[in-house]
Length: 366
Image (cartoon, rainbow, N blue to C red; front, side, top):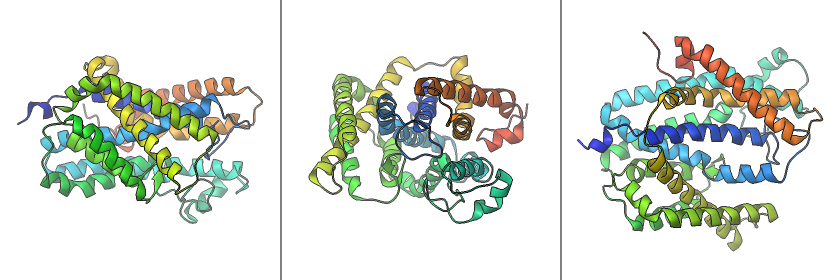
């Protein structure tokens, strides 16, 4: 058996923890930037907060799918197909269902009342939660079957089922070469012609390809050495393409279907790919270790992810009409939301078995 498949890669745990904080900050920024969201501040920022949102939005969800693909190969090494699928349904499906029926209704309610789409109390709103499917922010349907921000869990569950026959049939790539640095982002660029459903800044097909890459390429024993030899080039490319993407976006998006539109998408793809490689490279170099903080935060990352958006939306609703400066609101939103989430996790979720399971953790039967 390949030793690389049996040794825990702590750098991946660090990336997951850091990415979870990243998505938390990204959703805090959604309260202030111009993009549609469940509740918006009374003053919108089109400068530094928008720049942050654009930068993080390029790579934040792709990194989750890349890590998920990498973890899949380790999971399948240790588990049978049935056990693997059973674990996925428990660890992903239960938090998703919990989110759909418990965590999503308050968020949809807040969205409806702040956009004058409903008037009344939350209890009066609850019977209408099942009126139509919630398909997008600002739409008419209320039933958030995807769990709103928990769409990632639903999509990952589907990807795991769909890709499993492929993983069983085709062996993992043994050698990651410089050629892959050109081929793989080019395939991602070509996937742009397929438009299915856009979520978190990218199409589902794009995420599926990244998930496949995680399993076949990012998990290769030769991937990290290849990153090391190309690191400086990747950093330069990541910075340049990110600046071009952000400036181009803020100046004005190109006309859909035009040559400029394809160039714009290409720049975004290269920025995403480059940052993924840079992040994996930095983590492999500096974060290949464990400590008590990582042990604690790695377990907390899933409950934190499940709980973070409902808390942000609720705090945002409480302060959205206040006349505070944006900077003060941002600091308050980040600190208060983070504190509430961690207090709930530390003193409640992690201590009660049923809550651990509902939030994607294993039961603690000690």
